[in-house]
Length: 210
Image (cartoon, one colour):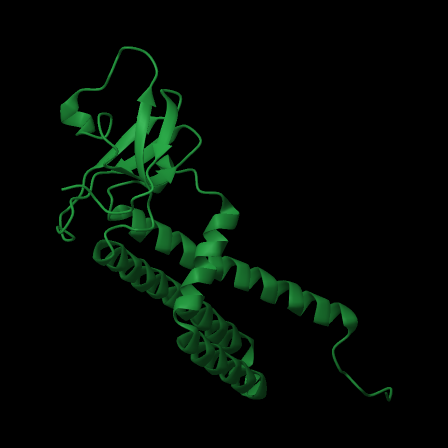
């Protein structure tokens, strides 16, 4: 290396790598948050009630990528091409122009994260409906105490094993009551305090009740 060589230093490379990791992590979180928001919105559950850990949001973001791998590859190649072009023409664009292009690329990336999350969630909800919610087990709850919820609220999920365990948070169980051969039925979500459910029977049959 000559004295006039102005190549990147180890510190520059480490900074660039750290920035890239931070950007990828933020992108995965944005895609995962959108996926979770849209998915559970179909069951009328706000995310604040679910207490989803950050690492699960990142996993949902990875799921968004896995569901559209070729789109992810094309977007990555286009992004790399745009960055190479930006590096090449940075002198002409100047500091302000380069910064503006970078901001535009970041906004575009997060817009794609939002779009990908929405599409993946919509596709998964449609799959759940078409497969009779096979991914969610049929359960029957045993109840603590005598203050049973009214039938108007709980449907028949306390008397039968027709309820489906949709999600679990630290303090709540979220159940749905689908009806066989009615995939397009808009389902209510039953929220049960987990402290009250002292036992749960998981049914071996994954078909919905009539």
